[in-house]
Image (tube, rainbow, N blue to C red; front, side, top):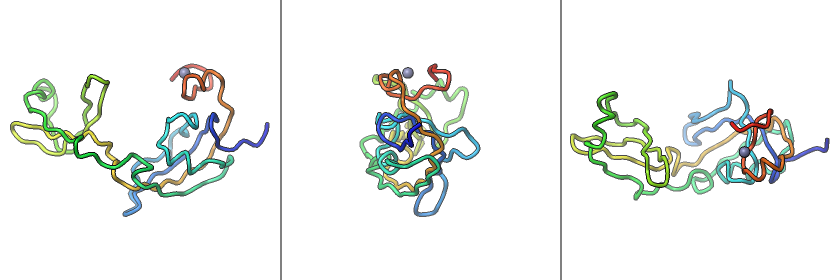
Length: 167
Ligand code: ZN
C-alpha cells in the first residue's frame, strides 16, 4: 500500500478534540469512542477542518484554530424566531420547556434543530443558529487510518462501514 495522505476522495478516520480558544472548554471529543470516519472533499465536515488536515499522514496530529467563518459560520440574527407558546402545548404535556433546551422543528425543508433562548407565557424564542455559530474553534486532530474510497462511497458522498453497508 502506498503511503496515503489526506486528500479528496480518501476515507479518513480521526480522533479529535474541539475546544473553545477563549477558555479551553471541550465542546466535542472522540475520546472513549470509535474514531470519526468520513469521506474527504464531500462536505461531510466543516470546511476549515478538512483544509487544515490536508496532506497529513497516519499517526500525524495537527492542531489549529478556525475562525467562525471557516467553522459553523457567523451568527444570523434573522434565524432567531418567536413562536407562539400554544404551538408547544402538546409537547408541554410531556416535558416542561426550559431556556437552553434543544428541540427539533419539522420545517418544510426538513428537520431543523433549535435552542430555546427565552420563554414567556405567550412565546418561545427559538434560535436556529448552530450552537457553535459565531465562535472560533480550536481542534486537535490525530489521523488514525486512511484508505481509498470505493466507487460507491464516492457516488454516495459518504463513508461506508467495514461491511460495506449503510449506517
Ligand atoms: Zn452510501
